[in-house]
Image (cartoon, rainbow, N blue to C red):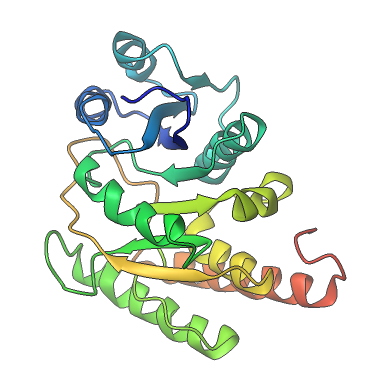
Length: 248
């Protein structure tokens, strides 16, 4: 990876919970990635995994966070975002540790930020409909959240649950103090939009996960849909009522 001097600094945050089967390959792929003028650093965040995830991480990088308590996906991601902000990275990327997000898509993900076109970039598998498209139940849920965002915010996000995202410094300042915890991706779109951040989706090709379990195992259930819907309405109402919009 390129040295930091005179480069755009990009931190790749990898939330990990029981990802021993995949995290080594993901880190190996990232170590070989080169982007002209960009310094890349991978930062796995081990969220109290019960398997050998932390041992696999230590084989590949000296840079990692090993959380003392399980914070869930939102807390793990926010920990990485805080690290990026405190260490003066220009861009932070959220990338799953399960192998779904190919390293070669990162250049496309950060390009709109480098061109000052966007504050937040979301990688969507549904724009060109290439690569792994997820299960039918999950696609139904994602379409539901697309319609909900359009109703509440007037914007159309085709892949609101995508965990492949890039944030610039302005966005990192917003998420430093508050970031949704249990199901953060759909709720974070509300947070970004109501803080006047520019959100852009780009087409990416995703793969099937290499191993482990999804953090959204109950996606097709009515319980999940209701819980996330309530979370979205909660953050929407609180941010609308709050003078300082990024304070919950």
